Length: 543
Image (cartoon, rainbow, N blue to C red):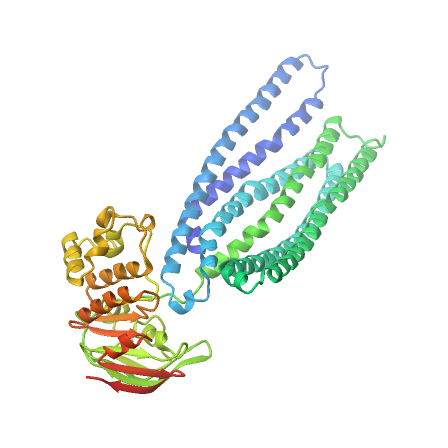
């Protein structure tokens, strides 16, 4: 965050200079009025003097309006540039996270950081520059001008302002704590609601509606209690401030009416005016401090994200052209946090074979392929691909030679063509159509209304058909190794046969690793590696 702000340091300094000029011009008119009030109206050139003061008064207002316009334009431009830079930096940061870092956050958290939290930064910067700093400088200029007018009266006025400021500051602190408490409760409410919404079918099937309603009502009541406290503390300081100001004004008038003290009428007017005028900017500062608590929380969350150290640099290491060969796990162990997932695992997958990884749910099948693709780092042992240690070659090199298809096809809300090519201009329509013909899936694509230009979100493609598109994409982005994670687990038998044929054709030219449960997939493999509790339970060589 500091790097981004330092990039715009000159513009930020310019903004603060404009704010100071505008606040000085805003505080100046009452001082001019004070000079007019103190003029000896018996002077022969009184008309000329008053005319000069009127010209000065009007000029100050004209300059004030001009500088305010310039100030607002510059502030908006600078803040918008900063926020765009923050959003770009944040987005790039997230995309470069290691998978272990990425898993620390859920999708809603990351989405909120990129949208709501960045938007809140606008209120933070704009609120601070335009409101808090501006009002603070306005109060400072008023106090300075009070001392210029009359020191004794200014002391009374300054004491009144200081006491008012203390009340405002303390109340804002309490409000900030209550706001933090409310936000935590709101986050918990959102999390619970999201979970209940995503599992709504489960609630209906097991008749959990009343239980869930009671649970959410309890959470809402807790948040409401915090809101009530917030509202009470929010309104409590105002009458205290009113009483403090009334006492300050009374003290000023009492001192000014002392016949033994010679004070000009203009000085009395100026100090009374500024003492009363200070209430408005102080209250606005108070309101901004309250609103800024949410913005500061957003700033802290974004800063935490930007300070994450778990970035992935896929360029580090040697780049091996056409990485190919046997895959060998040598005493590989891996754990998530403190939980050991893979334990001292060793095996070899020969080049050009089709291998199935089998076992019950949670035994480490997907983790095994994840460490092969370097989505996660291993704690001990080593993994060799074509006699190259994958920790020594670049991650880009490794992933350039691996195609991965999960049981949930990654399909974007875009055309069929763009989902297949992923903006790779080297892949032509002719190549796509030839592969479709070769794979025997022409019927699927012939049914599409606009062919390859069909928008996926507008089409009525089944789950299995979307999986076929994912397979076509994987094949066209040619790789030496293919990893299929439960590719046929959620599709019908007809589509399964279609996909099995595609896998068989892929395995003729490449090494294929399949995570599967279905008997048909296991039987067609050259080797089956059975896992149990993160260890190899049994290896069956079939061919």
